[in-house]
Image 1 (cartoon, rainbow, N blue to C red):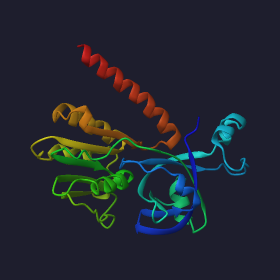
Image 2: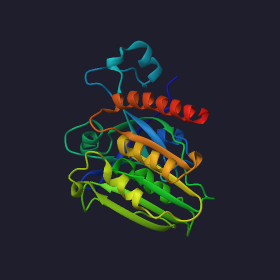
Image 3: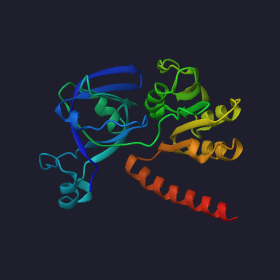
Image 4: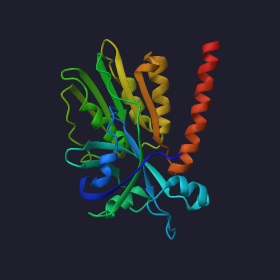
Length: 278
């Protein structure tokens, strides 16, 4: 059965930086969108295939049963940056790199009244209030979730955020009551960083604070994989204190990446079972 579908309309848009666009949506459908405690709360945005007429109201169970796969709406996964039921607003930030891709160009041309259909939400992470300090690492794709998480870190608790963006000028002001240390990294300054080493090197060089760390590490899959190994094996962070996931993989569209990610997760679980038996 498909996840619950929420239909909204665009209320307004805002250009946060050269490559980040904010979409604020609302409408009657938002009343049925559940609030959760997760700061990595995500949705799958539906993009209809050109020329295909779907039943109204849209029912994804009907689409899956009655339409060939190539006519199913494309899906793109995005973090809910903010949800305010009192104001009737849901906010999503989109990375935009020109005309390539699907969601970025849609966000760049979106205008009030445009339809926005979402499946979800999902999510599994929120900053543990009992942790001694927090580590949040990611690129632009993870920045909305990092920003949302920092707003939930308890007052005065240390938090270190390591965030990679394309270039100077693409930073965002991050609100937090935490004792916050933000390290901005610039991909262009690292020659485009095709191997994702900039984030990895920065985290390897960090002087970890004493006590229990709760870590959130999300972004490009290759960099995330290396960071996962480093935190688990070199820093000995407990698995229960680590939220780690690749949000995207260089050179792969979302559909293909989801298949690769599922296969990679199975391999990692097999490796962990083998290590536990050794």
